[in-house]
Amino acid sequence: MNTKLTLTIDESVIKQAKAYAEKQGRSLSAVVENYLKAVTKKEKVVSKDDELSPVIKSLMLRPKVNLPDDYDYKKELEKIKDEKYQKYLNNNES
Image 1 (cartoon, one colour):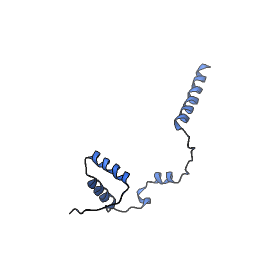
Image 2: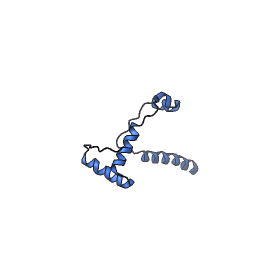
Image 3: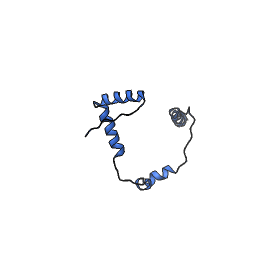
Image 4: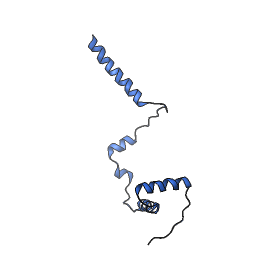
């Protein structure tokens, strides 16, 4: 049985949600209903320790690396490659 529900939601969120529903070929009501079903679905509760493998647990214990905001890993990889292949070229020139 369907029942009417009134919600107060930010206008921009409503516009985005309507666009999403239209793209999916569904009504906004159907999208919201399916979302609510998914988040309220009763699932077997499993503790984090039970569901994580030992490898994943060990990775979680490692310290986090703080990189500068302007860090560009692609540039760093290029530097490493250049150094590696420059050594190779220098050895072949001898």
